[in-house]
Length: 354
Image 1 (tube, rainbow, N blue to C red):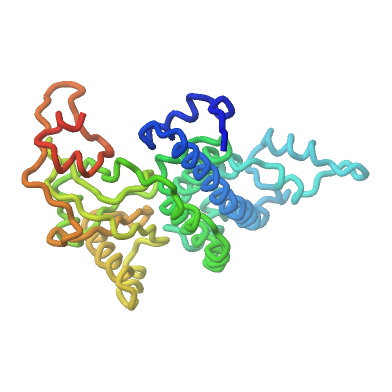
Image 2 (cartoon, one colour):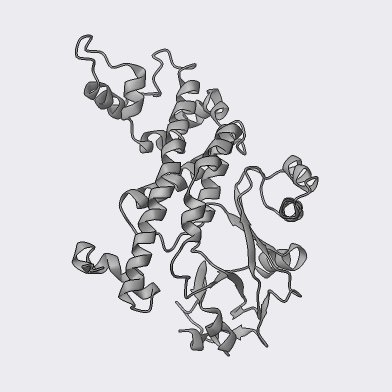
């Protein structure tokens, strides 16, 4: 089938070409897959956004005499009401105003500020009964959803995002509102099927994370896992590596599963430990370790379950991969970097990876 890059633009098509070693036919397949992922995620965003604004409004209207979700004069609400005035009564109903308000309006009600703190204490905390219980944690989760939703709506590349992880984050947010709503969305979502049909696997299949020897590497050695805040994003990866003290550690565990627990506390840990599911039991061990080592119950995390150090699934390098450059701007990994596992296994020092 003939396709023309001018339909897409050279700049927009470039990431897909790079991911496919400049093979244009494969790049088109990956580009088309990217659009299908965006469409599948957008269906979930649709249901979550409607659920979010309705649950927030249910609580806001119990505390505000006008039954509208504002604690001060809102230009956005006034504009929405003006657009949706009934032709006969010249009055906009609350439901029509709510349907006009953008997601950013609801996100902003969860942002920091004394008025929003007061709203949260008075009523909005009840909109998220399964959450960690803080406005900050809910705001981070909703903001993360909004950012990815906007990328999908603007037809951006999603190659730097793992659709499966992003779906799990979204489902955890939904569970904070209503576990039954999560079950419903899980039963209809198509993200999982579309993601598994990716036509070209990532060339760079190892994510190397900047790590603290006292925390991340110790956690891996104790419970074979890596834990980080849920708002961090990752591309689809097969292996994980650790960069610490100017060297990449000589082991690259297989990423067996990625989990985004809806709750992070002793009660959840006990429930997971009692499960017959090996994945739940593994998450319980990780959560127990995390709770004892500074992972706050008021935050949300994503948990990478990894093959253990002795496993045949863990790639092993003969020695650490040293980073010898020094001076300002010489840091090799600050957050994360991606590499092909073949390059890592062949490298003697980080110069071989540049």
